[in-house]
Amino acid sequence: MASFAKLNNNIIERVESVVNEVIRDSNGVEQEQLGIQFLKSLYGQDTNWKQTSYNTNGGVHLLGGIPFRKNHAGIGYTYDLQRDAFIAPKPYNSWVLNETTCNWDAPITRPIDDNMYKWNEEILNWELING
Image 1: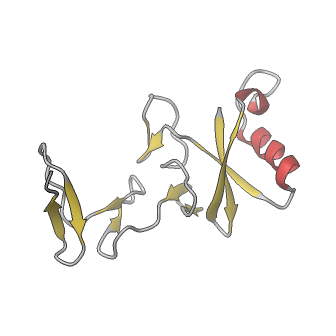
Image 2 (image 1 turned 90 degrees about the vertical axis):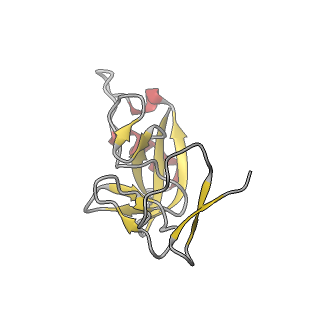
């Protein structure tokens, strides 16, 4: 299945799945434009669509394939035309966009151990979650 994000002023308002046969050309090569044409036939010619991939995060395809637009699109995400990337809403004011991954980074790296942490914006640090 191929996935496509419907954009409205570069904000994702819908994500649809399309069977792979729809996006394959006569040579069996997947073509994004074929999926876009199909979705426009269903939702209207004035709609705007971009292909996305459930297996893409931080510009890496988790199964070794070709990554699509840095991250999988989600409702409420932004499509950044200049980066050709889907970017999640900013989770906290203190976090900054990582230009390489197009994910948001905390100003302090989360501890890497067996514990669970949550970000505390008031103290600008990670807090241990009591288990």
